[in-house]
Image (cartoon, rainbow, N blue to C red; front, side, top):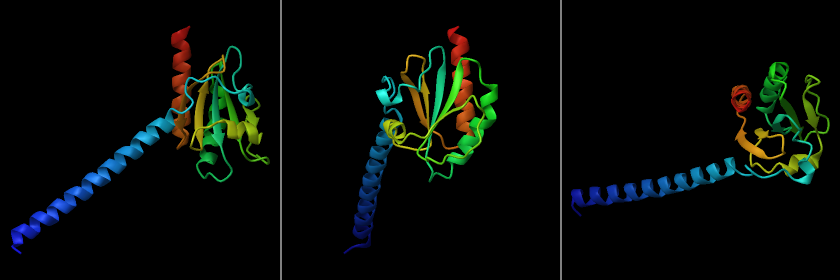
Amino acid sequence: MEPITAAVIVLFVLVALLLAAGAGLYRRVKELELATFNGVGLRVSQELSDLGRPGQTTIVAKVNRQCPICAEVIAAIARLADDLPADVAFMVVSDDPGFAYKLPPSVRVSTDPQVWRSITVPYAPAMLVVNEQGVIEYTTPAGSGEVVADLVERAAARKEVSL
């Protein structure tokens, strides 16, 4: 076999592998995009009826007990809770019945496992924005405390614009 023929065959195999890897990566990105928007625009179920409050936008954090990032997200909620506008509130939904984080009294906490399972986003920690009618307007993974701060800024700005 000629060296050029061998090189062409090797290059062809490498290009085929790269295309297969790219197609797989593209499929995963599409799945993650769909997962990010799971539940947006739907009225919350009966189990979640206390998430929405009349006259308030509720920023809900879904956390679990095995999540190392959740402690940072909860600390950001505790730090930002007192500076929220009057028509924006925090709620933390945890799967831990012994939830022991210290939060300001204005932050509602639910440790009901049925409520935690009813929030069907495929990631934790997750942040949800629920409007006053109980409709989920936005969901996002909460990978850090900065995500929480950014979401609070966006929610406050949206409320100012709608006034």
